[in-house]
Length: 192
Image (cartoon, rainbow, N blue to C red; front, side):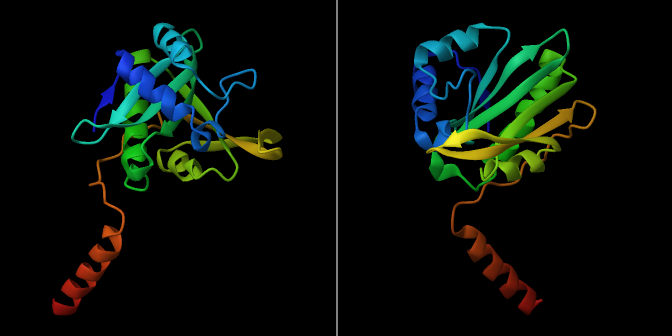
């Protein structure tokens, strides 16, 4: 798995397509109610010190998701994390968790940040990822995020550089293999 800067027009276009998908943008807010990010805006974000973006890839180098920091403040040493899996066929295989952990290590080291915060809309499956990479719940903003006309709460989290521990890489699993591994382990245990 690699973390790549968004430094080519092709990568910028790909990430913009991912972020234009409702299954991604419904969970996001880039300020002023902006949820969809155009390629032009994404390019501007890559050029600003207040943003830090990386695409994460498979082991073979295929781009599958994006992690980003907004509101990077070097004076106060803080930023806000967001991300999205672009290629949904790679969900539930550990890529986003590992990429998130590695991205945080990079952000804390390269940018010299002391604290990173994030928020997750209640009901978003990303909640588990945020908890796995060490974020701590610090609060709730009630009924402030709308999806299809329904109000949802946002759960707020933070992580200090001193608390961050980069996760070890687990071998990504293909869907359906977990059940086969369990059967194989049970079979092995029965024969031991």
